[in-house]
Length: 256
Picture (cartoon, rainbow, N blue to C red):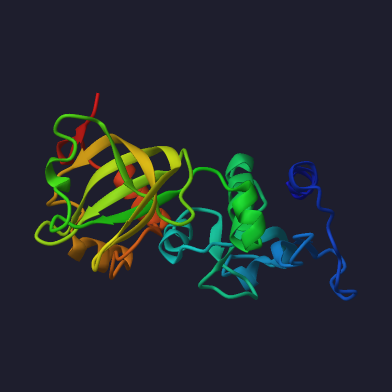
């Protein structure tokens, strides 16, 4: 499995292992070529030091996880543990003994690569992203915006690109996520400003789902996903993304 990991990283990211410790000459670090940050550390660790039975040595890989909620979900899975010898809030240790399937390990390497990449590199290589964006019924009738159409113009947020997904959080008196939309066009010229709102460009968003406003309420977002305010576009934690995708059918209205 160690060899498979090395080959995967070399082929996909064109990065070779470094061996910075003479005393532990089998421990290999993989770094970004620009910011020199680690995105993977492969080691052989004694089983007992990982809280496992026996004294044999096992190959493991340490990987970074930005979303602490997702990290908590991962370490409940077989073969994935709190990080050995690294920050346990943001890193995990994955066994390379076959407990975790190769494809899963490779996905976690990709996640760690993105988590440790420079801002410039993230923008260049990132795939579609998911956002929460605010909508205030006091200034726009968002409740009925999709009554007669499935596509509307909306204020474009910084960093949002075509292909991204936006979940619309409708403010008081609703205070809940109500819509899932796909961004179909960006950088539409538009200038508007008053005491409440400034718009420099628009984007087109196409409705994909409607959510029951009783499901993803502000209280749920705060207590279960650590989101205490939605004042502007913001990325969402992986745990919330999974919940939004896996919501029961009676809690959503699918758009044909």
